Amino acid sequence: MHSVVINQLEKRYDQKTVFYDINLSIEGGEFLTLLGPSGCGKSTLLRCLAGLTEVDHGQISLSNEDITNFAPQKRGIGMVFQSYALFPNLTVWENIAFGLRIQKLDEANIKEKVTRILELVELTGYKSRYPAALSGGQRQRVALARSLVVEPKVLLLDEPLSALDARIRKHLRRQIRAIQQELNLTTIFVTHDQEEALTMSDRIALMNAGQIMQCDTPERLYTEPANHFAATFMGQYNVLTSQQAQQLLGISTQHEVAIRPESIYLYEASRQYPEYFSQKLSATVLSHQLLGTIIRYEVTINNIQLTVDLLNRHAQRLIEPGKELLLLVDKSAIRYLKE
Ligand SMILES: Nc1ncnc2c1ncn2[C@@H]1O[C@H](COP(=O)(O)OP(=O)(O)OP(=O)(O)O)[C@@H](O)[C@H]1O
Image (cartoon, rainbow, N blue to C red; front, side, top):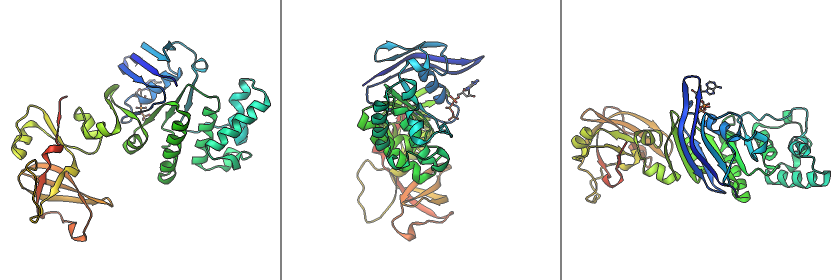
């Protein structure tokens, strides 16, 4: 298992700084996701790790060896891109065997390795097909197999699922994670999709404008955002200024206050509420959005707008715009944003 350490990494294009002072340690066998909005620098960071883009400052180490200036093919790093980049004139088998032929492995060895990897990505029956006769998900599995067959120390995945439809994407998420765990392969995955990051990763490095805003387990990132960006990018938090928190909840703080939409409840007269719930708040519905298991309301309370997620248990719960309703906030779920 191979660890990766990134130390004070910086990349500029002319006057534009893509990222600077990036520090990250990825443990051997870990699945780390770089998550962030378009243009935040995650693909460039991945390309720097692969050696496809030069860095301006800092070091990259792989299992304690400084590889910052190594050529891409000397790094032992495999990479899968969003576009499959398969050879259209080669069969699935030959696409996967390609890297092994370059390494001049003997035929028996190639046969054994390609057979094993085809089983791993569940494409054994497709070995004689050409890429044009495969679905998008199957092509991406060939691309994955081609990277895995040469047994890289680290696997880099740059939005490998974003060109696929939702159903295939969910299936492949699980499959990639299962393969990564079976091989115990150190993996760095790039995505702008929060759900993908939350469901697949051991840890997520949340990036914005060339900086890592928070690096944590999915659960901690979601329930304990460290700053305004993390709170608003993950999970649709309501962020109140300290003044609004005082006005709405009687909370005295210098920091912004983050409240998850699912921590706000519709008052039910028959229930007893623990002391960590707020007073009843009278809100006016501005809009509602039916999301399946939940209904997302935009409401306003004394000119403070909040997003509220209520479980879609009863048909009568769909409350029309303009209607008044009584809400309670679970204050134990409130987070204070220090940055
Ligand atoms: N070769 C280049 N020359 C100049 N600027 C570049 C180059 N490559 C990337 N950039 C700039 O660096 C910034 C980060 O780009 P990057 O592709 O790393 O972002 P990203 O987070 O991966 O976004 P996306 O999800 O849209 O790919 C962008 O502003 C981009 O325009």
